[in-house]
Image 1 (cartoon, rainbow, N blue to C red):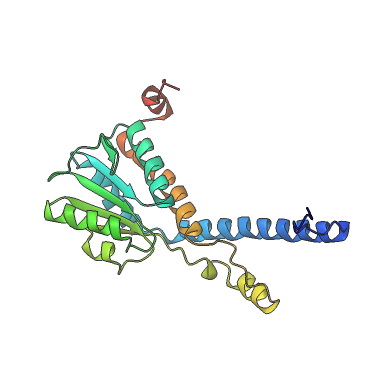
Image 2: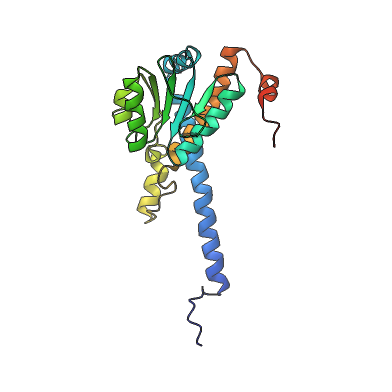
Length: 217
């Protein structure tokens, strides 16, 4: 039987050029993300961060929620909150209890319009539960219903306008950060940095975290 498999060219020049191009894109992506993180750090509003911390410290319990990769960011944040002493749950887990007045729910959604997450947010508001939304869209469904919006700008084009224009003029229209990559990674770094603030507010250090770290590994 004839082998109809399409094989990639074996010309070493083709392979080298493809490797060089992919490595160039990889390094450019790292630089875009690094620039975006620096810009995000400069744009953080300290009063919003203080209010964020106050809401968590006054909550009976904390619930976090997000869909897809934002959900993974939410779980990572929940783990660190647990490590520094908060009573925290992840929405959607089978052992998560019902929310009630006095609790705080943290929703993570780049668009702020994720259907399942916004529907959960509406339920929380009916139960008089405070909602904090981490999003890149203040005017979204979640943003408008929230008690506090933590804005994480995910517009990577504005991060390095010169670099973006240079790639456009050279005919390189590839997105270096597809889908929600910028929001998810920026939010993950931001929330881990926010944990450092909470550690100071609560007066705990790494030794305290280690005592609450799992030993069932």
